[in-house]
Length: 153
Image 1 (tube, helix red, strand yellow):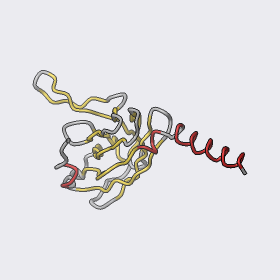
Image 2 (cartoon, helix red, strand yellow):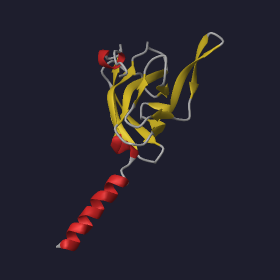
Image 3 (cartoon, rainbow, N blue to C red):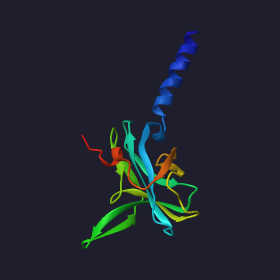
Image 4 (cartoon, rainbow, N blue to C red):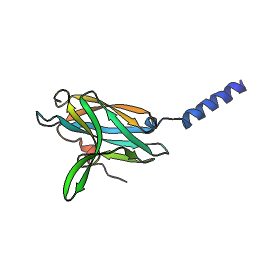
């Protein structure tokens, strides 16, 4: 019995130590922006929180609605705002990354079919340790109020 308890304790400890990055991540208010008919590219926005003790990097995203999915940011280059792909989006330990219009976001490029308001786009987030997290992002005309009124503390 004592050996079984020790084995159980070891397994529980190793499960905690080996927890995947995705297990520490939660996502709030994910949505995909509805764009006018004919536009083949849109963005996905959300708040990604990291409850873990280690920084985590979002290194990729995927979805079945577009042919290409990239991580992007907006940069001011010579007074002109431009979108640029980024290799990763860091989510600090006990922190969060805000993906919002005009900042970091996920680009859905070359949509396979036009998106309609209320559609749900399944998105898979991939992290630097190889773990992943799936979420559903609703297609909305405007940003959910809670995500955009979010403040850092």
